[in-house]
Image (cartoon, rainbow, N blue to C red; front, side, top):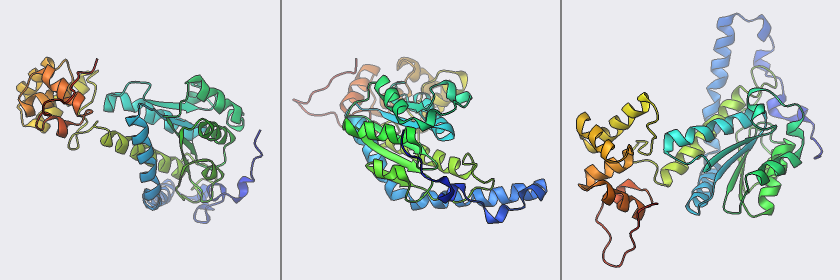
Length: 313
């Protein structure tokens, strides 16, 4: 077991002087003070943007090498990582293995706390071995306190095999920062409810995860303009969204957009390339393969003689 540091010194654990009388406030006052404190979170995240950018670069590099984005955390932090991971397939058309969320205590811990799991660094090593962590992957470790043993154990193991590592904490000078290649520290300060890091710290981590996944997906061809062209139309709402995406990207009317999506096998991105490049579905697939999924490149001039063009299997 790693030696635990005294949490009393952590800003996320100290009392908020502005909410000492929280229990005497009216509901309106409680909501007002929570709202005021929440407004400080985006400002704190803004201060960490340079580190977040470096983390995105690591994720993009990993993805271009066929590596995975793996979130690792305990409690609220772990749940936020899992949440971001499970949203990637429907939003960006990724395979389930491309973005993974691991939480101390396993899947059960998402719904119910597993006592003591976050205190054992060996559990993180076992979890990462369980998904066959490779040196081309990147591990993003989330810990509001910045000192969770489970997370530190995972970072150390990831580094030992050559995987890229990122830490996300809500305290400055966090212990986990020394265990990662890129350390993201978002100083959210004392919570409205002392020590309840599901509040501002949780919001900050959610914003950071939003940025890491969205920016890296943009840089790896999953977005055209500001449209999620790789969306998977797995329900009625998403079928309608895919149609609207194709219409917005190409100027096609609803009927043409819907018909082209059908010809594209339900894939909005392929339909966009078909309409913009004036080609059939096979040619669109060839163009997207050559362009590594980037629509702007795919709709440009086809490569000249001698270039290798292969359709994705």
